[in-house]
Image 1 (spheres, rainbow over the protein chains, first blue to last red):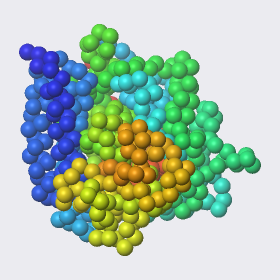
Image 2: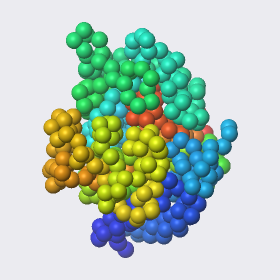
Image 3: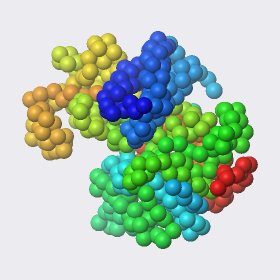
Image 4: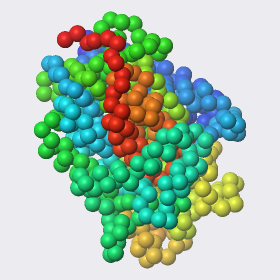
Length: 99
Length: 417
């Protein structure tokens, strides 16, 4: 079955992803924001993988899939860092840990 | 269709092109790019490229500046050799035809920017990136061993996973055999097999709504390596430029230079209230990190989409004289900066993390290299040197190092023809 006759399936997901990342995983992060972003990203991930497996490949769809992977990597890396350092700033861990 | 090459290069920015030019004498090179060959973030780079050129500047000073900016996460060894190599690499760019601006005395006209303690930024007017990209493309096009495939989107790199072997992040000896690429003419997926594959796909700014990156910066290479179970690190470090013009439909975002605040422009909320006094005694002139965090906090508190930069109290003629491009740009969307406040928003600017590579550009996957913004080299650590003129150096130097050492990986499995 070919699903991606409608570009909106891709463009809407992309906008949602960008909005989630900008609102919750931007300059200042917190545990709550990262968790919210993660939960929302999971839905987008499932939908895009479904679309990827069922439809004819297009560059736009591949880019969406890549960006969702990137969003996941940023959220995961940010959640694991229990300190603020350089460009990563968290309200829950405002200090830089000694190295 | 199946194609065999010695070197497969994914991406046609400065990282991919310099690598291609250097390895072309050793074998057949294929560069694949998902768009036009000159449609890269390199072409957009207006600033310059940092290199130690003349005394009183020294390699040691540049090394110290970079390590301080990296906030303790720099790999000092990488910083050291990258910077020690810098002037050699610049000479190479010049040999390939790049013209950097000179002063009347014939010396290079060096600029000084945030984070640098000396004058060391080479530039070509305000289009340094385009100049370098064009000259590299000229070299690439005339080389008989290099083929460029435009509008070919790389879907995934090929590893033993595609031969039916189970691969997870703990698997040792994951090996790259090339990549699956979408052919725009036949609309089929082509297989390009290669002995060495370089990922040079750039950053991932488009994961955010506002970014100064071109539309093509979608983190393709980083995502591919992650899916192939290769190591990716430091992804939480995304550099934001605090003030880009708020114009959601326009990508990439237009930058409102920080020099405007130096000139007297003041940050305000949408309803015209100042807020910087809550964060720092230096107000709108506080360091970039503090300003960015303050803007972010104000946006979060109010839930608004943007803040404003107010220049209305400044002398109109001086304003136009100093910032002609910004004045014209704002006017084109109906904002007269002498009468109206400029809507601004932070924009994602540079991806510090990425594919984990060693000092030779080798990823954790055998025969797979990464270079440029998609690679995490340990040069930037937690923060690049503010404006990013050092960004281009690792790219260029690591390519050279790859070259000096040669591929030392031995493939543990073979892709059946």
